Length: 614
Image (cartoon, rainbow, N blue to C red; front, side, top):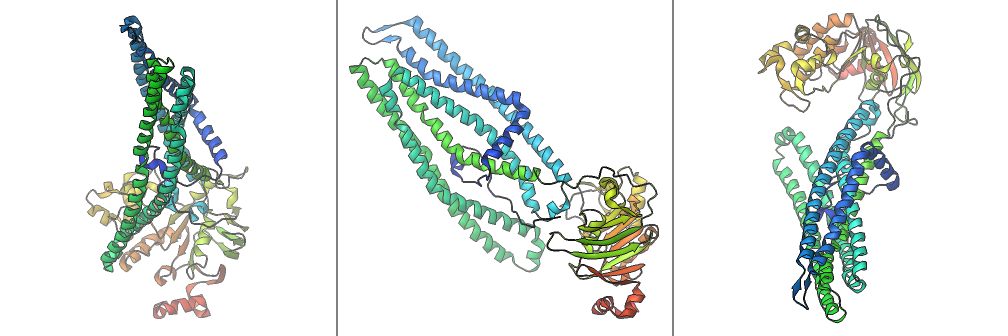
């Protein structure tokens, strides 16, 4: 197994709409634009009927908008300035046509908006469901090598970028292209000289967009960087608030916050000032074009016989022709940023899932005794950096094995291989003599009950969290498990007892209380193999002794693995294995290892527990 260990932090400030100052905000750029676009199209094809409808409606809306100035000019031609007469029927007809065009444009625009929003939200739901389903299938190595915040950012911000930003930007881009092309075609059909005058705005808007983007881009980059730094400072200080208060670091934290916040203010201010100049200057160019068209149109009407209606049409187009250019300029950064977000989502979706069950994999039998064997097992998270070397041992059913050693020696890695969170590089791990890779993975893990040092609670009641190991358990069985784990007493003191709501981020329970709930889960599960990874590290000595007495009968019927450092936890184990630098340095009972005066002996002496140990 070759695992690239890397730290990937979430990108701050991704996404956003194409309007306002945010249109010039630079984002992360995709590495494979064409490939990402193809994959996005494949995702959108799932809603092809709605997408096609939205595109058609967008095109119709744009065409309607283009024709309104044309018919407005025709309506003005109903007035004959030379004779002072009015063709009322012609005027009424064109007014009706213009009115119907405005109504049609409103209906089409509203319907298109509803369809686009519906498609966006359906795709949000579909992508998040697929993304979360993928997360359940990825190996533990994926989570060990990535920031959890980065994964959360992908499933929230980046999925939104695909489903909303790209969907809306696509329709806006189609609308801009059709509006510009249609307007240009009709203007050329009406009058070429006036068309050339109207198109003066194109190079001016292009130059303005390039200038503003160049000036605002560095400030937006600094803004994003400082926003990320500020978010990180806020997060770590909220999580470590007790430590901040305990060490009296409040003033220093406030100073750090003020410094970053001041930098963020300056960057945001400059970015918004530069990008905010766009619309006023754009209006100046529009008004300049309008003025040039009006003057040129007046001269042509006097000298070349151009009708007033034609001039009026061009005045409308002069206001309309620049908007698509501005929209496309604003969409550029937004779309590229959204494509980068899509690429990050697809990167996770492309990760290799946990190795599938072997074709001949079987369900573990109902009478698994719990004999465990490690046969010449070697393992490394990276192929060129092994962690375990030729691990060999056998555990009889019902035995208790204590794994001790320095931090990083490989104790938890042995447990990870036993539970098949990782697959061995060499050798094999067996249960009742069968290679665990011959068992179906989901069924295999039902053979284990695990209590980790860091206890995970899930949103729900206390009873729900205990029942997590066996969802079919009755209320009486839940209470009985809590009593065995010595959790019942404190649970009854809670406001709603077993119905008290908790969550993973809740700080209403102490670490010791959370561990008692985790031990109650183990009691309830009834699995033949028990794994305790520093399971009593957060409880007081009295509670630890109570738990150990309660678990004694359970461990007599189960094969148990203990990872611990306290002498009181490990001394009664059937076998104590000292793990040192990925090897089993020595093993035996407590008395045998003490007499050997090896590493175990030195560990006990270093703890100052020699008198208790003899």
